[in-house]
Length: 161
Image (cartoon, rainbow, N blue to C red; front, side):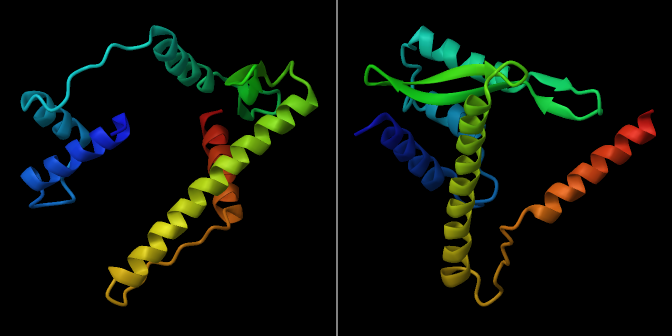
């Protein structure tokens, strides 16, 4: 059984033990319960992997403001395979080539599409098997949402000035 499958099994046991209200289950509560029940113990961590995860999160949070007042993410990555090993190559948006940035943007867009597809499958399942005819409508065209965020951000920045 893979580690993820082991964690999923712990969650299933947690649900059975505490599942009276399925909308109240938290991962923190599951951790407390699993640790107390000795179903989970910390594994020895690969320090380089731990550092890598923490560094990636830190780099994703580097935000700059351009002369137009637009905030943008400064650090971007491209996934490459070198010597049979997949790795993330990090670059700075203000210094990286167009090809690097295009590849990074394509990867992020593909990630958004994959998340949207998974969301659609979840909504479709719920609507077909769980909604009792009261379907949830899902709009995957984000054009208006992005425009609203841009307008709200502009309005907030103008009020602050």
